Image (cartoon, rainbow, N blue to C red; front, side, top):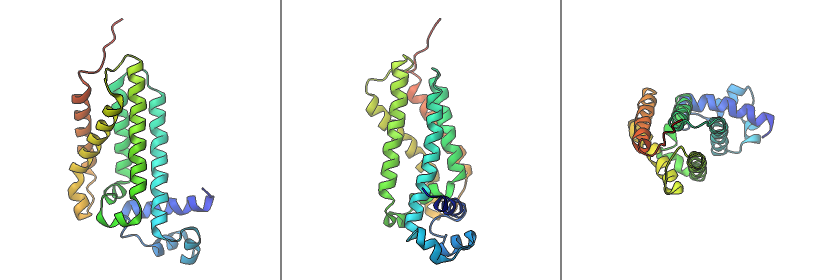
Length: 202
């Protein structure tokens, strides 16, 4: 991505994170950048394209941080699960307006569905790799890693949606929900995995 687009996305994300997608205009972004609207449209023909690139940038940063957690896995399965959930919670706090905006009806016309599907599949693949690593290390017992990965991602996302449904409907953010989401996801993870973790004895 070229340097100018990176600058535009950085500024746009500040607006999107504070006001949401629908309440942010291209005029405001151009003003924040101290450029003309025509100049902004040279790089982004419409707000939809800018939204998609902005979401990709956030996703890329999240997945890079998640890869770091995964690469440091040393046998403590639940600790790694919790670190991943805490990482996602930190991103959710920072980009909460983006998070609740993903589910708004209006955005379905902004060609975001493909982006969200890509992220869903990416989430499943990351979890699958982690579960495979844990099973191969003898730290976890799972009969069907593929199905377990899909179910775990779906459960985590459902918990998130359940806690912030009101915010999605009203468009009024309440970041306290992130703490509730994290606590619920941790409880669910403990319930799911408590009988599947292998305790190694020396």
